[in-house]
Amino acid sequence: MTEKAIQVNSEIGKLKSVLLKRPGAEVENITPDTMERLLFDDIPFLEIAQKEHDYFAGVLQDNGAEVLYVDDLATDVLSQSGEIRNKFIETFLDEEGYGLGSTHDALKEYLMDMDVKDMVAKLYAGVRRTEFAFKNDSLHDLAGRDAANPFLLDPLPNAYFTRDPQASIGSGITVNHMTFKARQPESLFTEYIMKYHERFANKVDIWRNRDFQTRIEGGDELVLNEHVLAVGVSQRTSSKSIEGLARELFENENSNFDTVVAIEIPHNHAMMHLDTVFTMVNKDQFTVFPGIMDEEGKMNIFVLHPGENGVIKLEHFNNLETVIKQVLGLSELDFIFTGNKDSIIAPREQWNDGSNTLTIAPGEVVTYNRNYVSNQLLREHGILVHEVISSELSRGRGGPRCMSQPIWRDNVE
Image 1 (cartoon, one colour):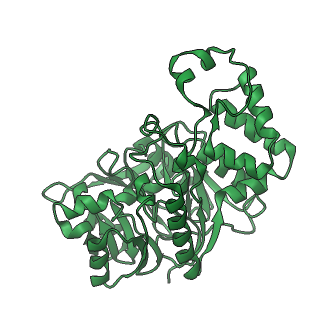
Image 2 (tube, rainbow, N blue to C red; image 1 turned 135 degrees about the horizontal axis):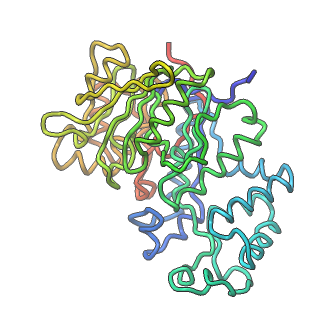
């Protein structure tokens, strides 16, 4: 690999290029009956969500970041040749349960006849049963719950959280096998972009591909420095995936990573990823939601290092501050606790992504404006805070870090 297309050696280096997905029709294709299956607690108002997302993108651009949109990159790739487009559609349909048969044939014809940009938008938005004529002649189309679903292909409303289908780590990326079926198609777009887009093809190390069956999501993957990765053992990422990723990073000659910190957090919807409870905002400063620790400040943490003959060495800890000091070689840390540890404010602001800060330079972050207590606390700790509007975007249970996948950061001196 002679040229790098990805450089992310920290959570805090100056953000130079970032991958986003503007919310589209997929958000309006959530219904009360499908909310739980599609992993939403409410239905955002699309017009306002788009305005909020445009404001967010504008803040990143105003602060020197190139904004790339995943659907634009996918359109570039699928416009290259009929062969690539055909292969992508076949894989997409097969993973959605339409490997063959009359419904497969009708869906494929419907999609392949579209302009490529429209086709990509349609795959995100979902395909309704009533959109085109097809033969209802399979058990899948006629029986019970399947027939009651108004969509042949479900919408992908979580796609504006671009952090999760993939994760940039060093000069490479993980293309993730996501936990819930509602999100699994998202990383197929990543796979094709990394394989076929001229900006990325043959310029990116794929540390872990989406063919693994153990779950992992980018919200749990935090790059603390050029050789230390923290990963949450969470509702969305399994310990097996973490051990597998550690092995891949330790054994790959293009990887500089020799330390993986596995941090166990509560397995629930409110704290679905590590970055909803713990983020890095400066060399020695972190946001922390106090609810991840017990009353004595303890939690379950393992540090993984490469051992001899391919064996991974494990060290167990129960104090987050102790671990972070050790792996980063720091004598002091500044933990900034969500909601100032208040028993009402902290869980409220964590629910609204008060712990999900996106660092765009050392000591400079983007946050939701609604979490005013946590934001003021960040300022009191010397952090420069850029607030973005958040009435509708936050209904999806994700904040600025969730909505962004860094592609390039300057290295931290």
